[in-house]
Length: 456
Ligand SMILES: [Zn+2]
Image (cartoon, rainbow, N blue to C red):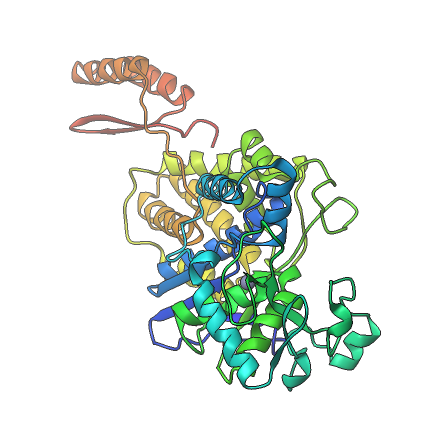
């Protein structure tokens, strides 16, 4: 059973399944108006690791992750560049999924687009105005946060405490708001802007209304887990939740938030800070698996610094695993159960991937020692466990199983030498093959080579 920190209750508790054997997850997806940055990469990788681990554990996962394809930033960019807004959203969405594919992130089971659900959003806002939780102003329709008794449950702050911090007064029409924390469910459009009809006037939905409608529509009330980056906790997730509460609906049962990507000084990394901020740059400069490896070696709630030094270290760690996998690719056995138990215990403890990676690296070390000692039975079981663990966290191993023609010729000569009992020559050829990096196994039926054992 996976125990996971829940932001709402501030404690690590079992991640319960509404339907046994299945998990319903909603992850806030991208607003498609620019290239993905490093922080986006972290969020998708963290939840890809979670999803793969759950699936590896035998749980059927439905992961819904939206695309916000209507938003002020999209409209601003379209205006600035004098282009149709749909051209921007289509292009950015394809760049997004291309980058996620390179990161090895599985496509969500469902990718709803905000613009496909506007009718349902209008309907929901209608229900909120009908029950008195929402009201219209001159620039849109707002949710009254005072109508939500436990507003602040995710922020762990009361409305009074939030007031002391100042509300969003910069919003047009804010003077008509009943409370500074009230937020827009519907925004009236200006001439020439994309718009949809509503009983209150032409306009577009607010971001917070998109996710609550799409999550409830696709996953239903009381879905298992809602997740996203720590920056979404407040106000975005708080406001999603507030609408569900105001509708009298049960929302997510568990809330998971991943930590920030920070620069060398520990500051949250803005687009302009640090040396690698654009995810596409990172993917062009490094083995795409390196970022996943770096995140696996960091707890998902901790801040992570993404720099040349720790990406290089990840590349080295991957090279060690690849070489090991190549060396042991022919060793097949049931995975060593004790190793997998240790791995599961770490993962089930709030997805403690740094400890789980420790189990993996230790297993690589033990299996290498066993291979060196000729203890094939032990090596095979542990090697299988390593392969299993890599699958569970989405690490793709690259096995080098090519045998050079030169090595094939030497192996044939070795067999010929043995056939005429020229053991001195056979031994010399064996040493030459080992020097070329091959594991040499000689049986009555001939010589078998396994590549990649070179520097282990
Ligand atoms: Zn959202």
